[in-house]
Length: 229
Image (tube, rainbow, N blue to C red; front, top):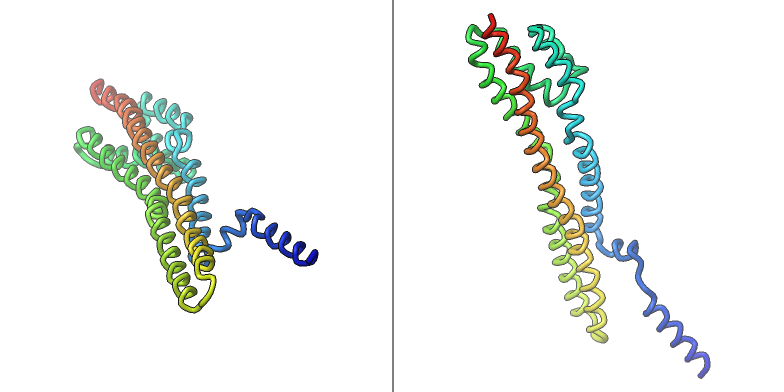
């Protein structure tokens, strides 16, 4: 009798013992591992975007000062050489290089300068937007993968019910809880991905607007030189 009481107590302790996050995630199966793999990719993309999509990276202050000094002194060739140098590659220099090249090579350079800068700015901004598409894609497909894992788990649950003659309610509850793990993983991944996707795109819009203002200010030096000439 005492032995049976001990066994019953141990069984209840095992049932009441909380499940760790690691064991819960492991229940997600192959689809759960795919979602975890995507979360690592998303983390790498987020770190990369935080490093790239910032003012000090897209619009370096030292480059702005140096280029402004060159253009104010009429050193268009020096400014162009500086912008096309791979060591000075940035969002700012790529846009200015296109405009200054058009300014020098075309007979109507001063008139085409602004159009060239606008086209180059739109192209560079579109590239920045496209670089965030992968993060948005992960945020879109993560809930779908979670739903796929849940459906696969439910199919397994009903197969278990069909093959088990007794204690079907317990078996169904265990299988459903395991099936819902993938839905949880998908949502945990999707919510921050969608949020950060919108955050980065808003940051790109803000920085591109600021870049346009800075480039217009730099172009004024060329217009003043043209007027004095």
